[in-house]
Length: 319
Image 1: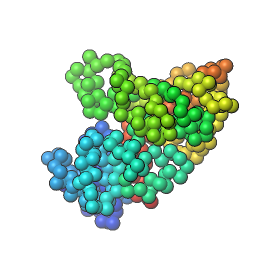
Image 2: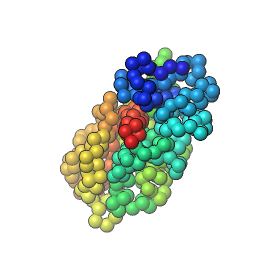
Image 3: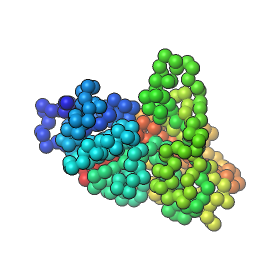
Image 4: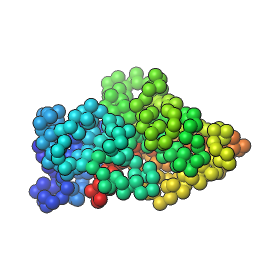
């Protein structure tokens, strides 16, 4: 077990951060972000101990804050191993995203929600698709423009890194030439993100969610098509755009693109924000205003995963 890279030079009063699962797709991203920092110490486990419950329990008990970058069942095990300690947890899995005992780690969810995260002992990192969907839908439900009982459809495409190591190996390994250019998945319509989107967007009914993977490494475009008849009386694309703009005014990580009726961008590139922690939201509308598309672009490994976890970590360390 090693605390690095500052064990010899940093005062022991600096917070100790343990990444449980630092070799997975998200864990590696977080590790790379935190390694150069001088305001904390990192605790890691050697390869032989990464799956050893006793070693993990010791690390969790010693740490001030731990980030769980694990499959759901292993994340639940880590929570149990941390029982009785003062360690604060950020869970990057989907195990606790609808658990009322955990704070949802989307800092921009509501005004002041960043302060709630800062005070929390248990934070569940949002999923990449829900980050986009909830950010588009929640302000409109809160404003009353989108009825909470609306029949909502969500369509999205992600880079193959959204599948984790399986996707990376499939598209970058020896059989990469046979990997599909594009594929839909989750067609049993039981995707694990649906309860998360429903709960945090405050929808009364589960949305219809159809995701896909493209033959590129990372980046997401997510869209929500709407007909004006789905909206509350008096609602139109301009009012939806105003609600989003008002909600995210002053939010460094969320940008709302300008709105011009019937004149949106010709295309949205899912890779446009790769390497950033930015989420960009669009309201697109036909010239008649009858058809509206809400759209979001983000890096599934940035704001959709590691970026959000580090954002919560910084809030918790400062709080």
